Image 1: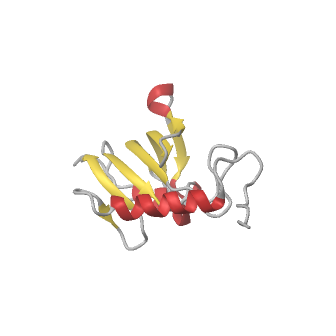
Image 2 (image 1 turned 90 degrees about the horizontal axis):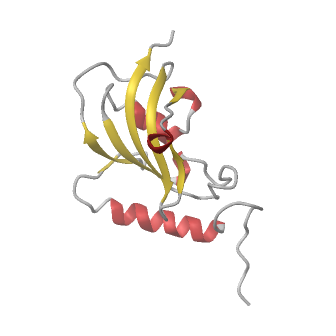
Length: 148
C-alpha cells in the first residue's frame, strides 16, 4: 500500500511532489548556460546589470518590481503586471531573496532561482506556496533606501 503524501489544507501540491519537482528543477537548471549557483544553493542569472547606485545591505529598504513564480509556472506575485512596486526591508524577506538582493545594484534586473530551504521551507506560505516549493523571482531593483 502506498503511503499518502501529507498536504497542508489549502496549499498547492504535496510535500513529496513539491520537493521532488523543486530538486529536479534545481539540478537541471544548474547545467544551463549563464546560471550561477552560489554555495548556499541560490541560483541566479543577471538579466540586466547596472553600474549605477549601490548594493543594498541587510539593514536597507528596497523598492522593487518582481514576478514570483513556482517552478510549475504558477504566478504567486507580479508587480510588473499589477503596476505596483513592492517596498520592504531586506532583512524582512526570505533568506534567498536577501542574499540575491545584496548582489544587485540599483537599476539591475536579476532572475533568482530560490531553493525551498532559502524560501518558505517545509511549511510553505499560505495557499499559493506549498511546502518544499522552489521559487523563481524576476526582480528589478529600482531603489535602495539606506538604513541606519
